[in-house]
Image (cartoon, rainbow, N blue to C red):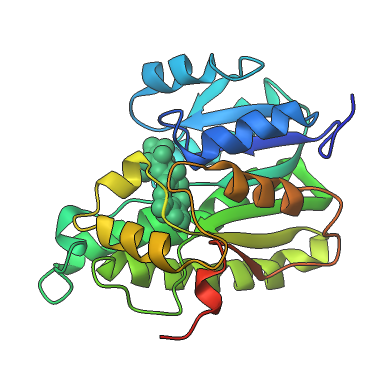
Amino acid sequence: MSGLLAGKRLLVTGVITDASIAFSVAKLAQENGAQVVLTGYGRLSLVERIAKRLPEPAPVIELDVTNAEHLAGLADKVREHVDGLDGVVHSIGFAPQSCLGGGFLDASWEDVATALHVSTYSYKSLAVAALPLMSPGGAVVGLTFDATKAWPVYDWMGVAKAGLESASRYLALHLGKKGIRSNLVSAGPLRTMAAKSIPGFERFEDAWSERAPLGWDLTDQEPAARACLALLSDWFPATTGEIVHVDGGYHALGA
Ligand SMILES: NC(=O)c1ccc[n+]([C@@H]2O[C@H](COP(=O)([O-])OP(=O)(O)OC[C@H]3O[C@@H](n4cnc5c(N)ncnc54)[C@H](O)[C@@H]3O)[C@@H](O)[C@H]2O)c1
C-alpha cells in the first residue's frame, strides 16, 4: 500500500452527506492508503448509503458524541474492524437555531449548553473514548472556523469554536506525554449541511469570494481535507496544539 497514510487506521466522524468535510477526508485517506472506519449520528442508514460512495465501502458505527454509553462502547466497536487507531477525525458541530443568525443576546443557557456539548466538549470525549486504541505517533484532528474574531451570524457557535480551539491545546498538553498530537484545521466557508443551517451564511460566502487572497471555492472540501490528511500523517511529527488555516488566506488580512 502506498500513499501519505499508507497502513494507517483512521476513525472518521461527521459524514452525513457527500458534501461533508469528513466525506472528503475519508475519501482522500482511502486514496492515500488508509483504512477508514466511520461513525454516524442519527440517520445511520443515510450515512451507510453515503459510505458506499467511498472508493472502499467503510463500516459505520453509531456515535452520538453526547451519549456516554456510545462513548464507553466505542473502542470495542472499532476493534471489530481494526486492531488499533493511528488517527481520529472530529468533524462534528451543532448549535440550536436560537444560538445562530443574530440571536446571541437571547439564546438560553440550555441551547448554548447543547452547542458546547456537541461542538466543544465532544472533542475531548471522542479523543478519550478512542485513546485505548491509540499509541505514540497517533493524531487527533478537528475542524474549526476562525474563532479569534466575532462574526456577524455565527454567535454561540463562534464561542463553541473558541472553546474547541482551547480544548485542542489542552488535549495537546494532556496527550503529549503519550506521544499523541492534537491539531485543528481552520476552514473557510463550505456549503455543507451544517453551513446551510446557519441563517445568513451567505454573508461569509460573499466575504470570502471577494477577499480571500488565493480565491475561495465554496464547494471544494478537498483543500481542508488535504490539510487534515497532512496533520494525520507522519509529516507533522513535532506539531501539536496547532491551528492550520485553509481559508484562501482570508485570516491573514486586516479590515
Ligand atoms: N462548512 C463550513 O463552512 C465549515 C467551516 C469551518 C469549519 N467547519 C466545521 O467542520 C465540521 C464538519 O462540518 P461540515 O461543514 O462538514 O458539515 P456536516 O453537516 O456535513 O457535518 C456535521 C456533522 O456533525 C454531526 N453531528 C451533529 N451532532 C452530532 C452528535 N451529537 N454526535 C455525533 N455527530 C454529530 C452530523 O451528523 C454531521 O455529520 C464541523 O465541526 C464544522 O463546524 C465547517
